[in-house]
Image 1: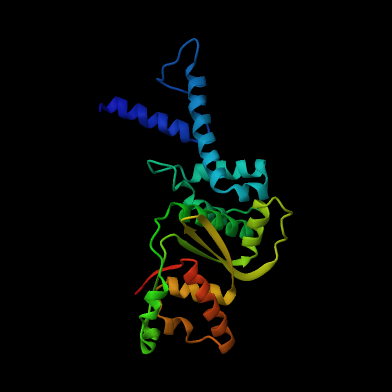
Image 2: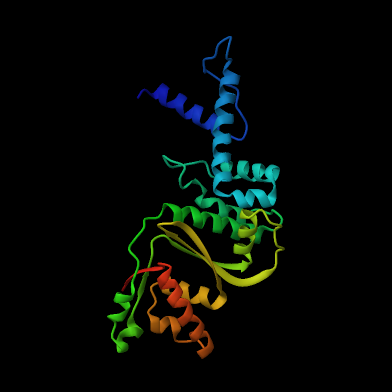
Length: 251
């Protein structure tokens, strides 16, 4: 590639992604399509495609803040994080962390909602794996349970929450009135099964325990500080988690 061609390609890229369109210099146009108009088409298409991509991944966030405000947020994010990959599948992965740096009203609640939506995207694209079954569990000796580790499914995502984020997302999906921003220590787990994505609300204890298991803690490390009442809750929850395919193997 010649130096001149490389320079022109770099100029065109920077002109498309820049906040403000530069005056075309050395770029050919014509009577039908002047250089300024041709450049404007590329600039518009670039940002419009990325805005559509973000809105597709964060439909609930866009609904909560409104179309105009979301368009402004998307444009600011596009400027801060131009795409750097060959595809746009992972483009939204920085949106929730970036949103946390803004001053938008209700930021903390929106960040959680964005994280939930991105967790859904990640789970959707994660590989499926065979689930742990009862036969695997029955083969564990009684005195070996404390040292057992559980491998979580690659399509499982756990989101600790400070707000009723799962309820907010469910209200959006069902086109119901959105709940207020009440504080609530809880969580939501997302799992991709062969039938599709599933979401399950968790209480604070379930969220903490599942988080420990996902971090490769042993059962003894995970359950050692729980009260008798909480241990009973987790025993009941564990039966559901196994049936729902949260785990793939014993470690």
